Structures are given as structure tokens and as C-alpha cells.
Amino acid sequence: MERTLILLKPDAVQRRLAGDLIAKFERKGLRLAGLKLIHASKSLAEKHYEVHKERPFYGSLISFLTSGPTVAMVLEGREAVTVARNLIGATDGVKAAPGTIRGDYAISVQNNLVHGSDSAENAAKEIALWFQEAELVTFTPIDTPWVAGG
Ligand code: IDP
Ligand code: MG
Image (cartoon, rainbow, N blue to C red; front, side, top):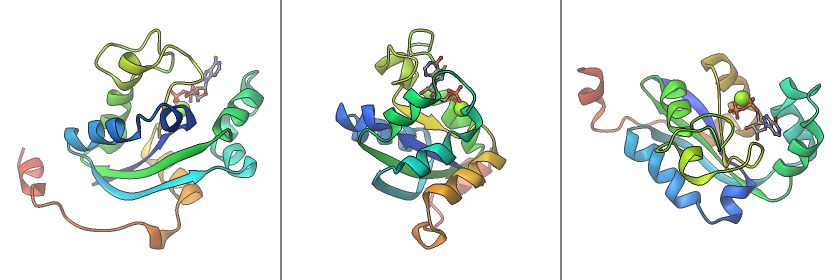
């Protein structure tokens, strides 16, 4: 089973969409392994988006991510990274397909509600940034054999 880091960024919390968005991931079949509300420090935001350091929008992106609380989640399931990215949709809310989170709820490029890790390797790094190991909970959902059984 794969893990991914999902952030409901400050626009999602401000717009009171946290519950709706968590529900979308759960309904699809991913299980919660960690969940908390956190107001990201500048240092955490900079580490999280370090890959975009040289981009012109980096400063604005850091201001956005530190502007209010974020819901941070670790979700687990079969191909969790791909499943979550497909649910989230394209980066620009204008281009994101209807039915995806950004397609249904976002019209901005920056304020696009959700972050999802783009690979299992990056997920592991990002999870370590946002969560302590002791905050992650292991359990086996009772429908696991339905998924593994194909
Ligand atoms: P992703 O979140 O779909 O993986 P990335 O390209 O990794 O998109 O960009 C990270 C975040 O940076 C985006 O989710 C968005 O908030 C912001 N961003 C990306 N491109 C732009 C841009 O051109 N202008 C402003 N913000 C951007
Ligand atoms: Mg990305």
C-alpha cells in the first residue's frame, strides 16, 4: 500500500471546504493515516515548495501557504499518489477537468485548494516534513481484501 501527502491549503480551510474535500478522498477508497490542522511556518512552507524556489511565483506561493491554517493528511491505499492526483486535477483551476477537486472548486492557478505528492519518493520526503512518525496511525480497513482481490 502506498502513502501520499495531501494538504488542504489555506484557501480550502478559509472557504470551509475541508470536510467536503476529505470526503472525496475517503469515498474513493483512500484511508487516513494521519490528519491535523496546522498553520505552516515560513520555514516549513519553504522546505515543502523548495523545488519551485527559482520560479517567479515562489514568494507569493510561500505567502499563500503561510497565510492561514492548512489541513495536512497522510492518505494510504492502492496507488495512492496517482489516485489522489487524478482526484485533484490539473494545477490551473481553469484547465482542471470538471469532476476533479480543482475542476469543481477552483478558478485560480495559485489558490487551487489542494496539494498532492507527485511520486511515492516525494511523498515520503513530504510526509517526514509535515508529520512525526508517532502521528501516523496504522490499521487495516476491513475492505482491504476487496481492493487487493481485483
Ligand atoms: P501541483 O500542485 O499541481 O503539483 P506545481 O507545478 O507543483 O503544481 O506547483 C505547486 C503549486 O504552486 C501549485 O499547486 C500552485 O499553488 C502554485 N503554482 C503553480 N504554478 C503557478 C503559477 O504559474 N502561478 C502561481 N502559482 C502557481
Ligand atoms: Mg507539484
